[in-house]
Length: 151
Image (cartoon, rainbow, N blue to C red; front, top):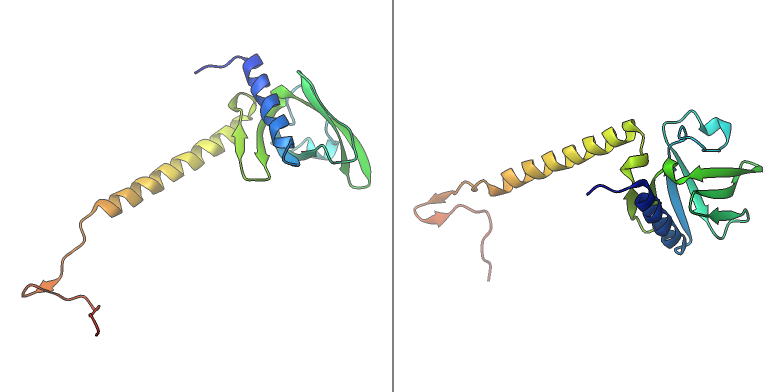
């Protein structure tokens, strides 16, 4: 199913607002996306993860175009501006993960695809092993198992 940018933005906004009800959320962003404003020392990374919470001292504003959050970096606050187009994922404190592939950097998508392929290959190998018949060892109709019934 193909989604428009507007549907993705609505989904992102709804998801992040719901996750913020659980105290905090980790948002994964593409720092090279247009309109992103984060501390300069983070801009060289392929992806950046920021912790957001309504309980932090700094302001947090969520609107139809972006998330704006005053976050503490070391001793100083910085006003981070995160357009929806830059937010490619979110993680809850309960371990839920959400990905919006349209906003993810290519390297991140390739990493997720490789992990998925590895999981599928592992599952297939495991399935093949469990479907093989076990060798039977019996001598004159008796099992040679090392387990014995003791009374």
